[in-house]
Figure (cartoon, helix red, strand yellow):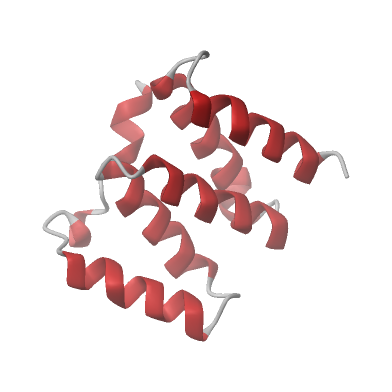
Length: 104
């Protein structure tokens, strides 16, 4: 599957508005352990091109539960890295962050 294809918003979020993103952020803020909301927020951010915000959410999911969605957050981060390319500043920064979290 092509990396960019993974970042399509979920069907029910395909017409997401800033309000949807705001509501998800509020859910995550109210309950940081709500990994479903956090993952959906990461998908929405990434699909809209806000890669840093999406990567932040994926990384936090990995910190909280590496196995969540069959290691889905780590896999999604790798897809973002592929999409951005090896010389991208975000790729370099978040690869390093991911390694720190995985190998601590």
